[in-house]
Image (tube, rainbow, N blue to C red; front, side):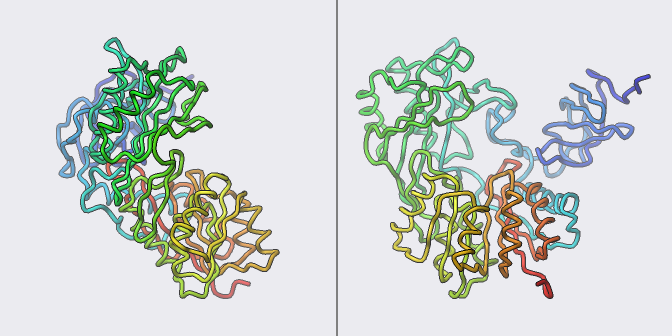
Length: 460
């Protein structure tokens, strides 16, 4: 006989919120049964309606707040409740930073078994608005014609918008201008279901320090009607534009970019600085979207690397060389490795751009390239890793343990995979000394962290 759940779908209840999930939803318990309530905050007494039940947990919609948290804030964004871009505007910023510190601490203990590691308070922003230097806006159509905006949470329905409060103001202006130009020249928005229409996405990139702007038009096919007029209008309406690019993505896919990219007008790159280092940014370059906090993140990585000028450093997952070039300012030599050939081409270009000669970049999987370097006699004193959300490849962690550097610096964008990897490094002879969370994405649930690891004394 199936055991009766303590709540039923569509049932209305009053509950007390006890905690937050890593996705920012409130957590309530009803006779030991867990309910997740989006937009509810710890300490609040709320009226809810159960929307879905599973065997061990369920979901509910927030109907009314009987007792409100002191940390609750009024979201300034008019489409906050529809858009899926931010998850935490209803929580004041100081409280967001505390939540992110707690999130890192919790997973290190629960997944990594690291109970006594020092996790510092999250380094936040003085002004946590208008920080993003890149907007990627889907374009579609409704009954009124072409629309551009952001996807509704957990859907592919586009919510039309004219401004986004975490985007740089220039990006908002670029999107508004391109949208009006596309409408003027009868450009059709992309229909995802029927796989037709011309314009799929508009991508705006803005160099915060240089003011340079790139506009990328992502189209379904090579054809862009009225191309000449559109280019002319973009140049007239966007004074600082340095590059107009077309990317062609003919596939039925959620991936934004296709493989083919053409410069329609201007330069292939725009430039920006992180600290004193200049970077060339192409349409598809990975470049951190919050350069102000990237400087904070990299400064901490540099501090944890503890370089004196005599060290050999390996930067696994080096991307376009952002961390490598920071490290090269203080190291004897830096070796960067990355699996994406275009990123390594960008890394070499960025080293040249800054006159940095004590770096070497290689294309390939770090776990294959690093043993080859080791066979050539390269002995790293420090290894830095900055992996994607899935964390480090297990073979790479084994390679690090085999190479026995004195220090490892781990830059993470996912606390759960970070905790998993730290556990393996801990078991292999590396002590996690301290962890510094950094808020790169204010008003979202994402948190970055920099970790300092040192080889344990007495380990051979």
